[in-house]
Length: 434
Image (cartoon, rainbow, N blue to C red; front, side, top):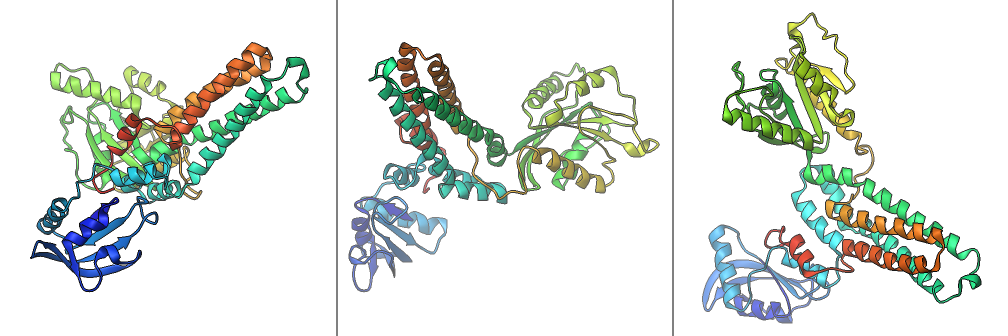
């Protein structure tokens, strides 16, 4: 149990009994073995750790009590602390206090949540890179440079246009263009960040009985979906999580695409089409032993090449070759043979790897919140550059205003500028105790 705040040691003195000095009189970085007490009743034998401001997670005085564990024992210790004057923490309140006390910025605070929710080694390593401040350093350097540009633009307003050196305006335009380029580089990392944080949405679709559920079972390694020879067995989406090549995957088996009079199956097919549109990778399956009809040809022709995989199943029922060519990556399989499942996994990894460098060291990448703010700031910078290039004095004044807006957006990324609503939105997603 962690207690943080100016009264942390007062609470500790009331509920913890040990030999020698009380907790409040002990130096930072030490620990004591003793008992948690409720009046004169011993609740548990425990270890108490001392951390003093500002050298703690929250930059406040902090006491941690480590009991023997177990739900009932932990509940009794918590009740003692609450009776002694503490209160229950809100979700993410310890990390929020660390931010408000200046120990970390908002980008690092979000990294704590990313680290907790990491679903792969690579995602955890990227979150740790962000927690250590490497992404924040890039944001801060960009903010400081834009702040200098904004100051220099405003300084030009104090000079008559004919008295400005000829090099001033071209230099401001060049520096603004450089800032735009750096923002574009940051925004380009969103795709990788999305795949690591949220997992790649991989949707399996196709006509009934082409082997979609068999593929799902082969990829997850157990019988997750029911497989029968009856068309329409899968009427709703079935989701499973797995990791392929260090990339978290949200794998979805969908209802077979066909015309049907069944209302339940029709709703399932509508959900299938919605998932297909949102997929990071769409695996469209066909039965290689049957002729491909016009409807399938239309679907195949509409598949985006950069996020689609055409899977030609049941190749064992043919003469060994489908003789089918497509404009999207494709693979021939017989999913009743286990070796093909590994081939499909490797194909999935290869396609998704095109959106991140799996050979490079895992590194922090921007989130959706960062992307939105950066995109707005970049639009403002581009408008600023256009106005500066026009050279009119009244437009330079407007350019200065655009620069300030860009700074506000960029400052909101790291928390240099923030509103209470933003903090509530971020930290409400944390669990109690973080």
